[in-house]
Length: 160
Image 1 (cartoon, rainbow, N blue to C red):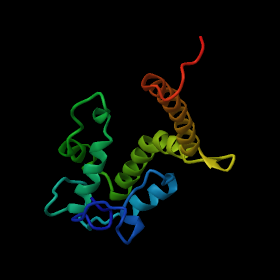
Image 2 (cartoon, rainbow, N blue to C red):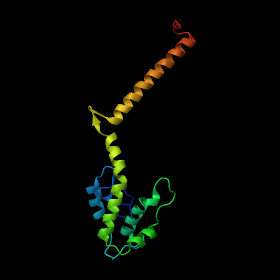
Image 3 (cartoon, rainbow, N blue to C red):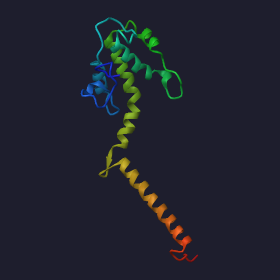
Image 4 (cartoon, rainbow, N blue to C red):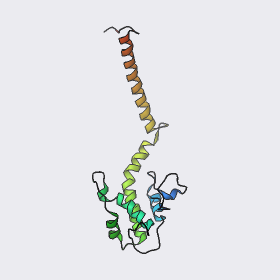
């Protein structure tokens, strides 16, 4: 959910860029966005989406990055368990933990994304891959087309 309005989905089209975390966000940007995330003035950390939507939103985000939420696992750490673990923490400490966890989990993805979108020799890496794929497809299609033309008699057979 949005970091600025927990009743709304996190969205790239939201007006406020601080409402969302992007793959391209670096550690300072993630920390700043989480630090400024809307919460409440109630002491402690507790999971109660109806009366404490801001803190509950951060707990839910953290649950998706919990150790048990890796792709090989089917369940993640429950929001209630996270709330119990951090119940006596300050909001500042909790937000720092959330930001650090997000940053650590997105680090490799972010680095790989930046590699793939990096410009080398005037072209993006993904453009060079697309060009190489197109050229290979053209060669294969030309070879196949020549075999079809030979089969239907449009061109003479090549000497062997």
